Length: 421
Image (cartoon, rainbow, N blue to C red):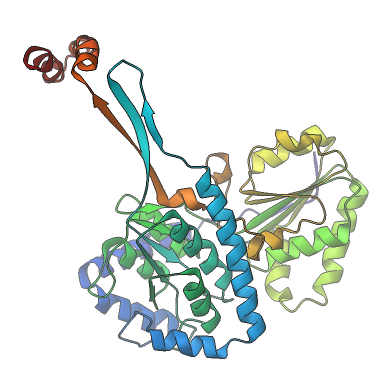
């Protein structure tokens, strides 16, 4: 393995300060509720609104700003995402009756959570696509109360109108103009205006991620997301211009985003580096994309495809593109958030409209977790029923095991049934 371009190590010195600040925000929201939310909305976004919930009138005004094409695009993307989520739901079936011991019934039910909070980032760009990705699977899962929140556009009292419309098209039941760690705290502990939820999903900046980490346990979360990342595994058949475009698409997210090319071709690797520099000269978001690529972009030369696969699995990237002639390597790739196969399959398609979800694990979390999907909002809960004969068949076994552990009350709970029933 050889680095044709190597990344810097991401700064860690601000992590302790972030944790401390987030802990203070959460505590303040828990103690002061809406008063604290108003204070933080003012401080961080210049938003002085006192009613955080978005009204139907505000939504109607947002729709009025949309063009017919914009509305059609959002609805088409929503249909694709909904169709995929519904197909996933069909894979999750209830286990109604399993008999292990005659006279017993075991099984499980698939139960949606009662409520969820969808955090839709604001920041540099209006990420209205995230509204579709978060709200739609929750609605398909059958969540009764789907709340969404996002920060106001800086210096205003309103969420970006495109994000509002996307939230509504997706089916959000409640929308709140609150962002940041304070939004996560409000969804976790509740305030006078914002009832708490059972699960929080959605990406955000380091403060949002840290707030989700600190509130986990009070609520469920999807995962703690870090800066966005893409890894392209490619051989000499790949077009360096396309790879360069995909690296920059990821790099423009923010200055900590990461684009990685792993290739068996030195010529391709060097061509990608050159193509990135060429494309940056005409890119409107070059300020962010250039900083990200310069500091954290990587191009790695692997000795062969087996080593390339090993490198990819170790990175466990959020997005994994595979552009190779021999696709027999695909089963060997096991750590990724979402997989994009072939040169025609742009990672950006998954970002917006292909139907799969773009809320994916980062920072190597793909080793043990997948992305947000309809199952994120479902609980698989077991049940059992024993008839008298089945109870007598198993009670003695349970009694012996309980006494073996020294848990005598456990044993007696089994033995009394044998004596009384």
